[in-house]
Image (cartoon, rainbow, N blue to C red; front, side):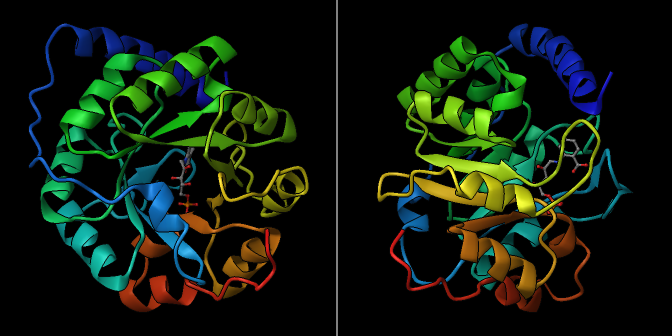
Length: 262
Ligand SMILES: O=C(O)c1ccccc1NCC(=O)[C@H](O)[C@H](O)COP(=O)(O)O
């Protein structure tokens, strides 16, 4: 059993519990800017900054981190979006974290979880998310399309995560507009930014789609490398959580985008 299959088995159990009750989270009703529109602006690489206390690959990263303080620091430093991990078992996050961050910031807000059922999207929306993540590797084509349509019907943006060219094609077939490449292999934890470059070579760049690079981004050289491949944004967790200065760490990743028309 790999970590992804373990996480998905745990999600199936949690979903039955979520279905026993309606979401009790009530975030302030805020109209957040669309993630798609946000990422289509400026000529610098955008940063989606993640609130990440712990992870299966690294164990504890920032156990005592305060999600509200972290979220506000990200917003002030110029993040385009904040990602909040809501998985409790493997990442020590929660929907409560998401709701608290939602009440404190105004920028787009991603509920980062392993979504396999509509009920999780209902909870994400109730807790204030404006974006949800769908991981292609975790879903069959029909479920991927169904969840994508459901999130769209709730006016949510959807980040569709891929890890290889076959998954990119599956994401394109469902009409995904925001497509991420996770540089981390969710089965063995290895990280390689070359995944971004390999998938970029097959990505049909145009103004209707956005290409994002996720995981393993630590330095401005990493950011410049994935920007060169065509990424408009990076999704960054650990390096920001461990940084003494969120402001300078985040801003060092906002490298200029190349003047190449993609
Ligand atoms: O981070 C992990 O160990 C992990 C393990 C198994 C499934 C998912 C995992 N991470 C989720 C993510 O995608 C990252 O939190 C996110 O992309 C940020 O990555 P990083 O900047 O490397 O913390």
